[in-house]
Length: 159
Image: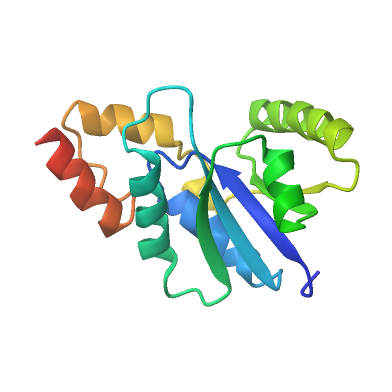
């Protein structure tokens, strides 16, 4: 798979050490990783442009990673970029069931698409952006869960 490009889509609100770990590991498996930051119809802690900026800052040391935002169906984004591989992280059976349903629907819309699932590193298996947001919102210390670029922004937002 080293000669292929894979997209890693998500809202990344906020970008966690688990996300970073998955991207770094995937970067060794694929020629290029496109971290595709999705615009969300739901309220997000950070606007799309800032989520893209944060992910790009965190991943700058990884040479074969590009970060970009998108605001369309994932399959349309993939077609526009001629990407056929989607990489997704799954922590639990519930994650896998959700991702399997999404994969099936997306494959109906874009039959050439394939999905690759990665399990997080053991130290990140419990980590969820929604939980990080909630801890930060209530003044808890999330420094161990997010890169410094995220932590400093969370502090400014909630302090």
